[in-house]
Image (cartoon, rainbow, N blue to C red):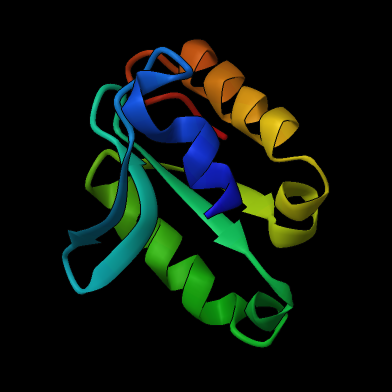
Amino acid sequence: MLLWNQLKSDQIGFRIRRQVPMGEFILDFYCANPKVAIEVDGSIHDLYRQQDIVRDMWLNSQGILVFRLSAKAVLKNPFTSAQAVRQFLEENPTGQSEV
């Protein structure tokens, strides 16, 4: 919720949606233009690294980049995390550049 408060209502200059179904996955956040999935990874993701790799590969095959943030970073400073999202989106205007 902390990050969402910074991303909603186009506050960073991009339209972001949350909890977006994409194939068999639900993305934490999604920006359709450019095509970027924004995922917040808590410590549980350490146990599911292989699933994250498969998910990222599938999303990439759909032309969607994946930008990951640690939950610790978001909790520590949601504003800075939102600015990192904005910077990533600005640097990848077509969603086709490599991460």
